[in-house]
Image 1: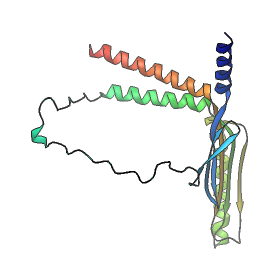
Image 2 (image 1 turned 135 degrees about the vertical axis):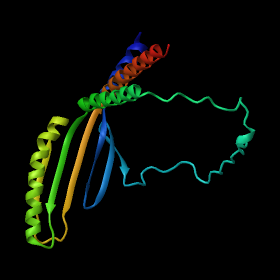
Image 3 (image 1 turned 90 degrees about the horizontal axis):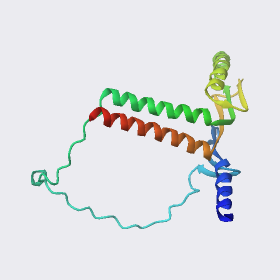
Image 4 (image 1 turned 30 degrees about the horizontal axis):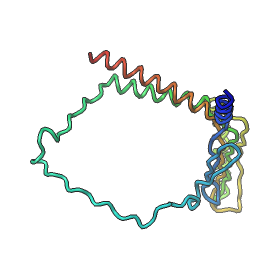
Length: 202
């Protein structure tokens, strides 16, 4: 009984651990970290992960028999192509899964900074105005699409620089149990789709 209780406690703790990504792009380049709880694992720039197998011998491929020599036993039966209704049903299933995932995903921090700059002061001012208007329009769209806890959108102008610069950063998180929920719900929907497909074919 104690062992079962310990296992349930451990599984409950694992289910509550948040996972996600933490990364962005700026003048220094692209950075990406995988988050597991309070631990960040660097994925980009490369070099953090090292392949454990080197000098592996190439596998020798077995010669394939010529097409004329293939018998009926070797020929694979062709699978029937999915109908238009089945393709639409699969697309609907994928979109439903993405919608579930989007509602469970939390954007902990979203930063989008743009600095307008060019060799021409007039072009710099025009770029700044366009960027400011675009960011103002993007704020409500982003907040409607995702659950954003903290955001930082801003536009600047630099009349001394020759080229514009960007500063993007995104921190997201989702808990293990939410991932399992999305996967289970999508799996159930897929099984229902397969069952209805078999009934229609029967």
